[in-house]
Length: 284
Image (cartoon, rainbow, N blue to C red; front, side):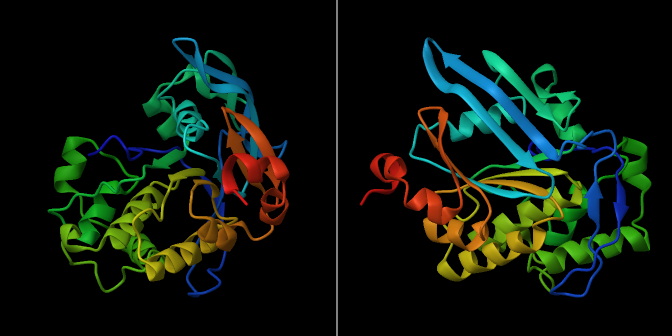
């Protein structure tokens, strides 16, 4: 199993929500063991990351609310990837604190422990098991006992099959479940990988340029998918496609990074009209 996917996340308590567009049940996650009474699921304070004296992240402060979809934009070299590396434990900050909820200190955890706690990350290039079917990819990513004996002799129960069918519909791959993943289009592979993350029931999703290389139609459908996930998961999207960001921002906060710090933050309209953002990123 690729290390990109969470092998096991903590059991969550859920209340049932109704999927607005498809009429299927889709649970709203209430993280168990993650104290979010202050309203933030992710809290970064004074994060600095130095590489041989170069500050890739410079005194960065950022918080993401429970159920929020936050877009992160900025020029190349702004520190977006390094920030996600800090959140997932791939990079240790030189200074500062990073909390998941109120009590989980990410700076003291390994990558596996952070994934286990409920943070899922999707990189720009899709990584799926190309020799296996779409259904098998989702099955292998499912949150379950992965011990060898259980894996060898397990048979999916009706609830597990229902979960896979639900995700298939959500990611627009229902009817494609028996197709070999290697034959999917680039966009479909991206959706499948998002589906594999969702099978782990993460509380926070980090998506790095999810529409890079997609056709216009695939980009539109991806925007629809993320808008459907809004409120059911907390989501951070790093993206360069401004049209896509406008589609998913929907009046929520957009954060602009520059030289490792927050340059501006506000609605898409507010950051687009900010002279500092125009100068360093958007252009006139």
